[in-house]
Image (cartoon, rainbow, N blue to C red; front, side):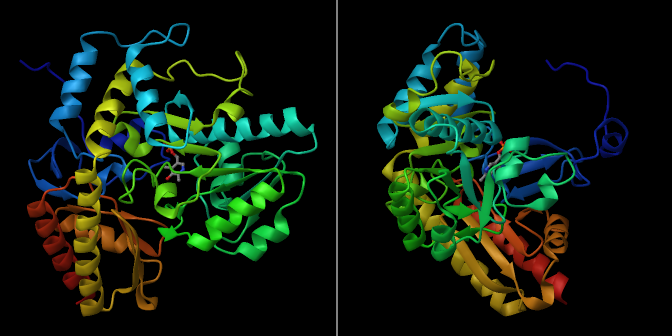
Length: 405
Ligand SMILES: *Cc1c(COP(=O)(O)O)cnc(C)c1O
């Protein structure tokens, strides 16, 4: 039995929504695995994964079960009380990572906000008020709150909103000498994405992250990894830091963590966590039982050798086929990334035209992403079926063939 809803269309978006997004012309209404159906019943293959969120595709039975069971038990109690799903999820994250302590919130921006505030608080408590500078990479992305856009090195997101958060310096990514020159004893933290996601799916070099770790240690600065996009199996390791073998002091997670249910987490050590004493930070919804129950189901499925090896196998298949398509049609200069976070860098002739590639894919009933105007991005479900990979790549080739004709 379904509830009667008033009919709505894409055109309504332009009437009732703040115009900060430009959504596609169709409205998805249902998803199953890596297939999505729109209002008109058209079936699409989903290689976008809700921007690296839908780790287990749509309507995965384990997630539906976790959500409905929790929905029948307890939705929300606030942090005046703790709850069982939050404690279970925190234990699993602690067991699976370097971290000893977890702070839950609702998004990537909030996880980073907590990370940056913790880094400043630790430096303040240990070394006094002069040590507050944060060094981040140009062209990075850490979210849309004022602190996180200030740390993200993209003026188009941070300018025009009045004074920014002070004490933030940007250096070119993957340039260890530049990082070395920027660090001082006033630096409280270095903030890096192990792979720059929004900035164009640009992986860090291992030596860069190792060098950053050593520089932070030498200057009593904390190393913060923003793994909002790279975490929870996306790269074929549970977190990308494990792939690189470089351990941060603070790590932020969100996106894939909830598999489609909003949740964020900041992970850190005992010694650092104690600086966020009672009352220093918080959020009403953080650790919400519904969100944590779903995330627990996500980690149960993803943090297994079979699932993580599956990411690597799927990755090879994607990369190989995308390189082939790129060469055949002269579209890409490079296919890069790790695991199932893949970026196809457009060749000179197609520079700035990622949106055209997205539109062409949509005409073939394929959902993909861009990462900057120069890179076509793929962030599909980590358990995407073989048949969906093949069908989606066939649709992609058709789109590219027509576009480049
Ligand atoms: C998406 C993203 C964020 C922001 O997450 P929200 O949930 O949109 O606030 C932060 N950092 C990285 C690396 C991201 O990819």
